[in-house]
Image (tube, rainbow, N blue to C red; front, side, top):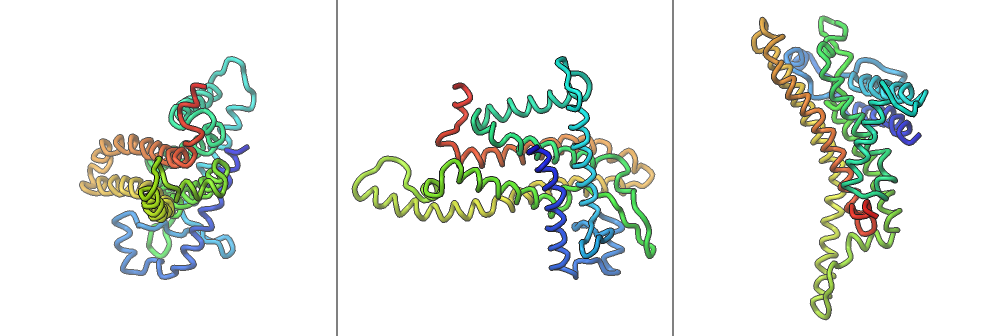
Length: 300
């Protein structure tokens, strides 16, 4: 149920983020000068392809919906008729979930993984599926011509900064909830501003001042985490798509051959970026809860 809830959130949050972005920046729509350039390279923004009332629909949002729906359907089909000896889709799904659980348990501990696994596993699978969906040959060729200009209706979901920022924002909200659950409001503030180590006298007073100032730096660092997480994922995925697009246009007659080595490299990048996003969010969570839920708890 929690995984389905996250998938539903991933359905909806990019919509509001992208709608707000388009409403705040109406000038972001390409003019005639940019249209010619867009024909030669992948646009930095996700072009709008339609509207549902006042809501602007982008091509990356369509891909995120397709991937989320596909994952939900696959998970339901794989677990519909559970067998004691798994086979087929059930076998693959159980292997994937158990492998991720064991991997995360060794990093953040037994107690913490029980509380947070539903999010980390879902975000890893979702990001990986989006990355690989964007690498399916011919995805960018689905579209239509309007006014002599081609409009693609499918674009890698994580090549849109709105999508990656939406996922980072979801994590940030959950991180705050988990931090307050583990520490309480007072313990949370003490974790940020409280002095560390055993000191006495004047040195203790100095350490209180120092760690109070360090706490403000920590707050700034925490506030920038969603931005850094979203930019890291977006930058790598967008750069990969740009590279594949550029390689396919170097020699038009060999557009089917030249990108192949880079295509396999992007397959590796796709899983690496999904793993990096999951690990960073897991470690950020561990750092705020490590006083009572470290990896050593996995052995008790």
